[in-house]
Length: 84
Image (cartoon, rainbow, N blue to C red):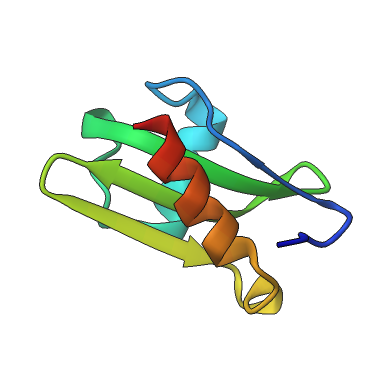
């Protein structure tokens, strides 16, 4: 699947850096940032536009409204699956 040209998906090291943790919390407020076991973030133009987070007992995913339906959700799920 091809992502929009400006979008890249990354699996940053855990624990997340403060700026990434804040962006992930904005997208997935239910995720316990201190207990993540895997994280994949979609970034466009230096801004986090999507997140797929996993922790023991759960996971959460979200993509900003204007970016939904462009394959980002699938790319995030695939990336977080590879990082575990």
